[in-house]
Length: 451
View 1: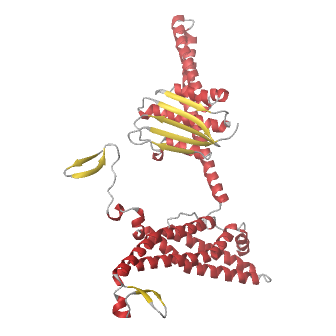
View 2: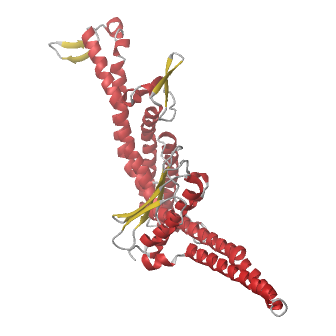
């Protein structure tokens, strides 16, 4: 509900966040402002530059490959082919930079050529064996005909649209300097048709407006093909990207395991170990006083008995934090019900699984929900929470919701960031929906793997 303040209508509402006012062209619909937006002109500029760059790249590749193939009867042809591939990689670097600057397309650089041994011959061999280099060469060949086509279409539509749209502004040139009424639409030996009366001039401008409004979307469609070509042929291969991702995930797993070991060592040292040391000292003192003061010794043994119970409880909690026995024996439903019973907020747990996932996935799901319920207990100020677990296709879905104050942010370096890293390590996803006033809904998605 908007409010009136000091004689003008406010854009703020009680139910929504304040929205910035749109000024100038931002008030127009996207279809009307597209011809004058910077993105449209950058994409048009990209297509204009594509033609000379494609001609240069195509000429280089065809010339050098033809020369190298012709000289293969001698040893000179091999380094010429390697030089052609190296030049294609250089052109690919230029194209990635151009796509980044004009299309906003971020494409990572592929791995450089790394010969196993030093020397020019090793570099030539590594270059010729590099699939990335050959993909760059294919790009220079395929991009040439597409660049000719897209350049022609973009220039034709762009110039036609703006020329017809602005026709009323320069139509006077024809009768004053051309000796005719206007732009000639048709003409033969018998008769001619000129766009020279007000209706025809207005209609010409209207057609120009339609073409001008359609041109940015046509150009965007053309650059979509360029995006696919640059990303598919000039970027890292899927295998290389997957290797990098797996290496990163492996680092996360190693760091997480090391952090867990440090936590367990700290808990043992500061908790159960310290209590057992104190217990041993108390029992030693009780043994010394057993003959002298049996009552005091009995009281000390009773206190030591309480310490034993506390130490056992801490050890049980520590073992539960490593991997709870109930999870192994009875699965997620019982394990999550157990952890929910220890939450300070009433929690409703619903698990809809016909079979159990792999132990590793089951463990990650358990600890994810456990961590989220701990966050609810510590930070949410909620009065109720729900935990839902179900399977969708080949994915295990978890959702933890509460009616608390909200404001949870996985990018703030909190425990949610750690959960995100753990899920990433197994190709999982963590989505956090937590507006400032609440409620909070955290959804985790894990790959389903059979036990």
